[in-house]
Length: 81
Image 1: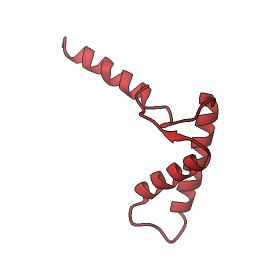
Image 2: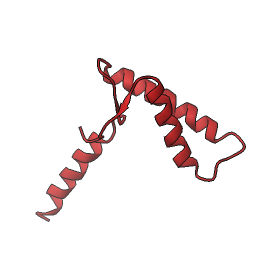
Image 3: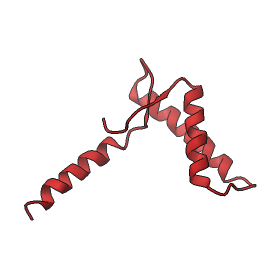
C-alpha cells in the first residue's frame, strides 16, 4: 500500500501535464494554443471521417493536426510541463 500511493500521485501528475496541447508559440497564451489545437484537430478529424477513409485514421488525424499547427506558427514540444 505504501508504494501504491506515490505511484498513483506520479501517474496523476503526469496525466495532468499531458492534458495541454503539445505545441508552443512565443507570446501565445494557453487559451489561444488550446483553441488553435481544437480547431486543427477538429478539421483533421472531419477530413478523416469523410470518404474515402484512410487505412490508419488516427495516424492521419495526428499528422494533419500537426501540419495545421505548424502552418499557424507553432512548434512541437514535450507534453510534460
